[in-house]
Length: 256
Image 1 (cartoon, rainbow, N blue to C red):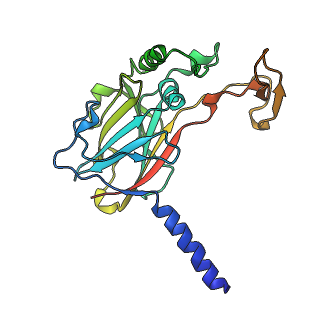
Image 2 (image 1 turned 90 degrees about the vertical axis):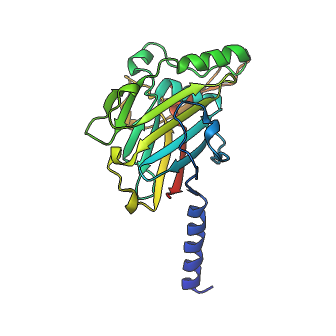
Image 3 (image 1 turned 135 degrees about the horizontal axis):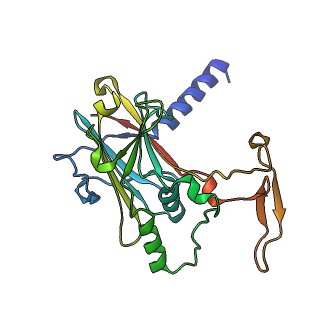
């Protein structure tokens, strides 16, 4: 096969792969109300390949609207404990530099004595739902990303730039998130944006190992578990924690 033709096929395949991750902004007659009731969105959910995030993005001339649903237990716990960031990239790529973190998660000092552990799958369903509701029962603080050197911290209800955000837990334990973001709040010129990169990323747990250098990397070792349990994996003398990897979803959105 000629090299030029092979190179063309590679480019074509890469372009086709990229296009799978692009959605068209949702159309609506009336903008959705940011109240945690997402039934006023006239569309089906977009679903990420891992099935952890369900979302939609819409826009009008001045604002971006986002709805998100998270039903996976571990991802919900990551949001409640470590926060959720919504970042935007006017170039349509990943690694957005502006956006908001809401909820912001627990203070790191709360984990110094007790390492957080994922809820046991065998937990009573009613207890599980109640615990997940409690994780987001007091989430009134928002951090604005990219407007200053440090994130700007504000009350959710006290934001003066028109941003609105809310997260609620349904009776089945699923999290519903809605946000309204004026383009001008992050100095985005909508007329110059063909595809907007939108990414959701949960926070994660970062254990501090006082006995090793943080740059030494991970050295997994297996240790016997308790009676009847599988061996546990440890990294630099720390037991692997399910919260150490963030939940992540990216979608490119063509604006209207």
